[in-house]
Length: 115
Length: 113
Image (tube, rainbow over all chains, first blue to last red; front, side, top):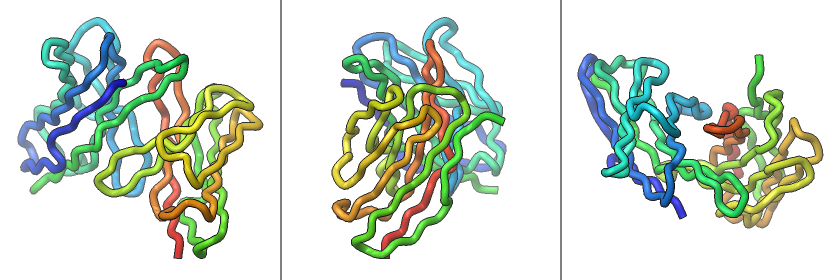
């Protein structure tokens, strides 16, 4: 079974600083990988996705993520954080299990942005 | 605009009452999902449906029931058997291959008094 680990429960950065959120996955084959963002009291919004091809993936809101197969990682990055980026971020891996498609989500990383 | 709607946004119920949360999508997606979200626990899968008239239990199905009579609709009933129903509930549908990414509704906050 696949699993996703987001080792950081909270990350605090200053506005304008760079950001990296970590995500490690466990899956036997090439995974479908996703990053979602959730503002308080809202649903999840897809930031970016990866399945194959270029391992550096560009997403919305200036985010990017890099797939590293050797490290089983899919870390999310942003060169300069804005106060509006404060939110909960979820990494997810998608896989078929017994004919069903069941994504697995990490527990999330809460991003706090200081002015 | 295509998307997923959930209603109501906030729901209050007395202990022991059943309550039904609505989820509707106009994305023409076959698969739909219900998740429960509690602080610090991420998303936990309650039920999912790959196609109309078919659904499967997720990791925490006890105390919940669903139906999938129409492609557009996947309502979730929280029954009195659910021991701790107060939570944030998210509905999602799944897009097309190859990515199969999920699209989420805005959520329903259920509070049982």
